[in-house]
Length: 196
View (cartoon, helix red, strand yellow):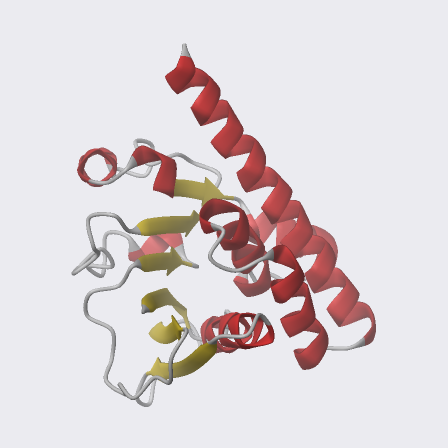
């Protein structure tokens, strides 16, 4: 079972991102569930959402404490909340930032996990360009598809089409596609460096 934990702030579409990821997995023939963990938080307060994906029916309902995947929509949370708590050693990490792990003060974290599974992507910038709003959720899902291969870009695009329509859908698809390409280039550059 693949377990994904998404961290962000209220109003950034954290819950929507988890739902989109579950729909993408479902569209690809797998079982999936998505649910948030929040109380009476307001816009800007830390929010966590979860997504589970499996080939079999999922009966678990509790929050994810040992994620295989960590997606951080707001980098200001990195030193406020222990977002890396419980992350499995082989886990994937995708952070919304133009800065790298060392620049974010996460050099120690980067050394504990597989470098080719740790990527930052300027999701807010991409979202602003395509949507005119700082909503990084769909952008990060496009990046996650490239990073992991655990869902496809086509699945993410289908999920966006189920949730949105018109210009909003088109903007989210363009943003997710740009993030997919961005992460693909980052991974290729890393592979080239490792090959030298």
